[in-house]
Image (cartoon, rainbow, N blue to C red; front, top):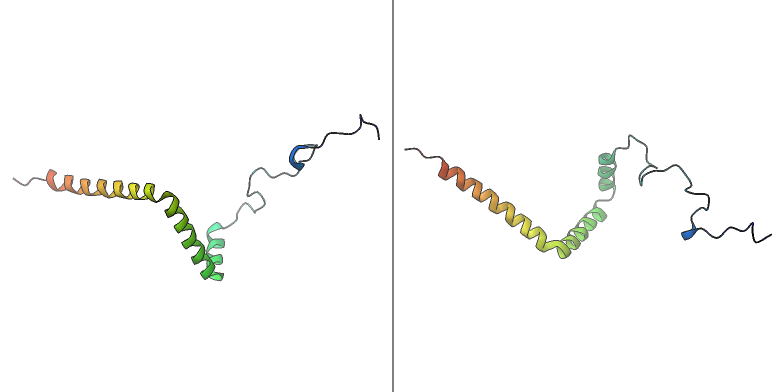
Length: 95
């Protein structure tokens, strides 16, 4: 084989002729009318304990890393609701 006929390797093992396949998005392998809610509910019905453990682990992870932001958001929401109620109470005057 001559040196002119040898192509350099493609980066990261990609095809040197360009993308292979027709997928445009990450979930294109699923049918277009895929029922996400039904699939999720079936998974939880089949495996309730692993789903519960996964939910607890995810909640712990999110709370551990974003707990202050979540607490601040909840406190701000509660403050807005209390102020809205107080405004409604004091705006209605029956004189």
